[in-house]
Length: 527
Image (cartoon, rainbow, N blue to C red):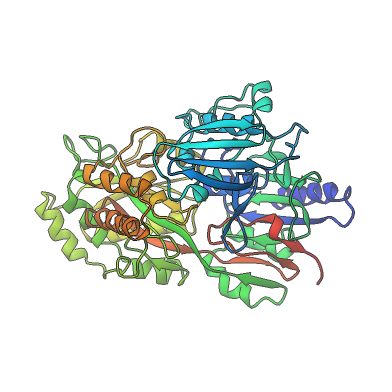
């Protein structure tokens, strides 16, 4: 647990940094979980990406309205169906003072594609990058990529020279608990410099005075404090130790809205919380079933899905702050439809019948792995699922743990069932279909398909949507892919998160549906 002493230490550190800059304003930001790494190509993890986007930049970025705008590239044009020319921003330097050039982009492409990382989806379909000159590149595609400019927003550029100097040409292998220079240090081009990271305590960032861009806010210093315990997190906000909390405990939202010293901004997040199931192993691990894997049977998967009372979870655990889900993408993501996402009432008796038809009239036992400090009420939701499945005759053991321990466990397939959340950084359903559902091959295909689903028909639909440039045809492919996923109960979607943020009255920021607060859009000051 983060103590008040640690919180005060973070406050003092950021205040001390702020003294060196005239009119500098410090933002003290608290949230539930820590980042996983400082390596920008290692882990496709929302909190990690939200922090690192302050220091590492892509060729493109989102503006306040989520329109694509120039970042390290100033302009671009498609010169053929499979080639784009990007003009790179001149006069940009990395935080160590070295110049940004085409060589850094080419190096970063080679690096992000390394198999030990999980960020390859952001460069999906890119065959190679050719250098025209120091500030011009040609991006050569394997086939047309209709959402290229959205994909590359999270393709973060690293200095080739800095990586070489510090023996960080290879991406950190997080699953193996590898520690590298790049996993503990940064050198980007962005508006903020990460001065230090004390895991599970704080991250401190300061202004990059040589940044090429212009901030819309006045925040020059940021202190990020991960605070696992809900009560401690809220207490820190109420006492003034931190200025903003971006993952409020649902039970406190109404009370905080009534506090005259605070304001709450909210909106739904493009993140779906779901349960994944091992559909690969011939014998289900962590189960009393021997010699076979019941999760390979669609009737079993449908039974588990039918037994979930999503309305009850929304009402009692989430206190209305969720959108019950039937499909694997949230409203706001291209491919989502209201009809496809309509939920059905829980049916534990129907689930029992399906289990009996599958050969399990008395149910069976399995273990559910669950994080306890990552998503809103994650452990509480898992506890509720254990009870709901018990009503259908299942005997489920809950194994809850911190996210930093949870994620390498499931990435190594040491799980039979697990909770995960998936935010859609590109606002396009291909991001979900390709990462979570497509059969694992190389690169981005199936890199989070941890249950190892294998459906050749679905793979063909997903692959077609990667390159289809006719908008209507492509949208139809996305909807079909989501429907097949639901019909086969490859995953058990629970809900789409709603994310209220609470802050002091004198803090102004833009609420982001990708749950990535941006300090450059934030101001602190006044009463």
